[in-house]
Length: 259
Length: 259
Image 1: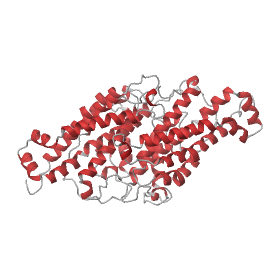
Image 2: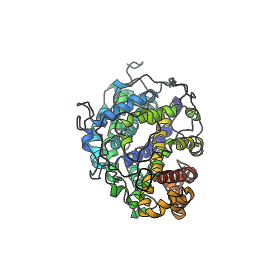
Image 3: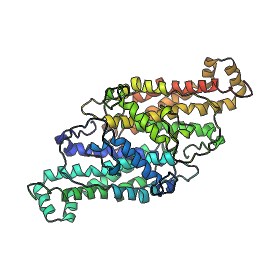
Image 4: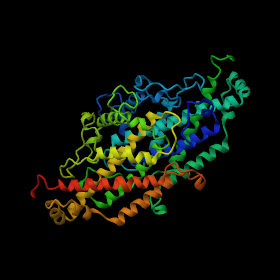
């Protein structure tokens, strides 16, 4: 199957296509995290002023992420409805002509990147990085961080497509929950515990498979801690995705016939 | 084992460390190529002026690679002795303080990135990209391209460390070959056909393993064409690495006591 086609609303909201894309993003996230954790944590790059970059209120990590977003906005990354910036204030006018995306999602301003950035630095990375600090790999680490956190953000905000598809499938049920502002009820309506268990099992298998040199097999050391990868999804990616889904739905009726 | 430590000459020239790094780079390259080939070839992004970016003599691919190098030079990517730019003319003064790398390699100006860029566009990508073009993913494709070609470049130029280590092990033999300008003899001295066969076998295994969702196993379609990955190494990466080794050695005696 190809990468999901966001230029076609019916394909973009087909739950089989969304499911394929979410599963495929697990590979992307695992690959990028494996690349990141070949370097030590290098905690100082997440501290504003921790590394001297000439901006005392900015960490090297934030600088790198911000400058990558500035550059990637030029090739219209943030015009795609599945991409959300961490630093919206630096986005530039693209040098490429805009693509005409159909209106797939309801207008909304859901963006959980601030929470993602916070838990990435405080929880996800410290659990995943196991190498001791013996040399400076600041630039390399920050470069891998950008790839990793961007792929996590894309996975989490894909929840909007999931929520829209579910809303269209069971409109009456969701309209009632939304009007009652029943976030708990919405959360229950979008939760499938069996699917979540399956995601975590699959992720453990991917972390072990992609993290092990197949030529060495059981003799090779794993490049990534599978427990940390599973915990990343269980404690952060899945809850943040649900938050995106719930908040998207809470904004779903604004400016429509139901308001 | 950690990422190779280039701040310590004895570690950087230890053939076991170099071998570990080269094998680890196979994973990196395979991961990035898998990410790239989820998109179609998008041949137009490699044609100068093919996509309108406001610079009629520049392709979108070259623009992206050049601007990434400009940005990454600021976090001292090209001060590392294993990183070589495609666009040296755009490199900036780093915002990070320089690291003090010891002099590990002999001064040289070997850089095969022009050839790598050429075969990447003409041969490696067309063989690896199998998805039909149904939508524009120009920015995404070019972003993945940068990661892929940078990792290939790093792998290939690691040949300098291999060559230096071999030179130090068998100095007399290489000095004689270099003085005789016997490139063919040097090529033979650095070639180990059994090791090359082993590299290609391992690469096929990695392409299959990392390219298949382990949850689907044999039922899953492969994300990357293993033949194309093996051909990339056999026809381009290994020959270019040898060219780096031979040319590095040809410059090895310049400005030294042997000249």
